[in-house]
Length: 138
Image (cartoon, rainbow, N blue to C red; front, side, top):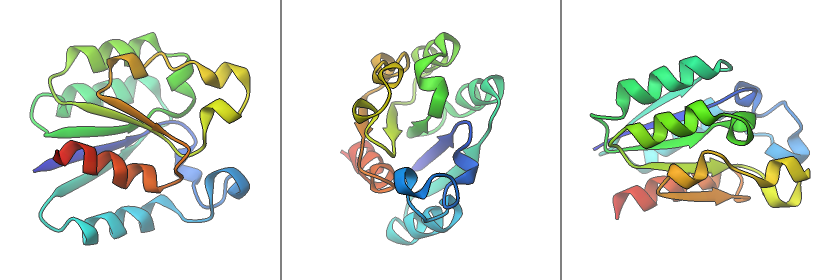
């Protein structure tokens, strides 16, 4: 089984960016932990601050991977193009948000991408990535 984790803008700063919201663990350490928990799954990780690069990665893996875990960050609330890319691929996509987007600014309450995903997890911290992987195993 192959799962692609894709993180969007500013998520390269996990562990140092607003730890009261996003926690103090960096994503590289957490990905290593996930690979230990799921040794029989090939877990690939990709992060970009650029919308088009995220779309390109979805196109690249979206017909051959068993699933995609996507945290599009701020693009969740603004990107029709990423939403269209999710709709265009065959691999199921699970949207993840580390913070509870509904407990934050009002503009974060709307996910343009979520409607094209298999499901949306929000507010479980980094555990949301593990929960997303679990949902793809069902």
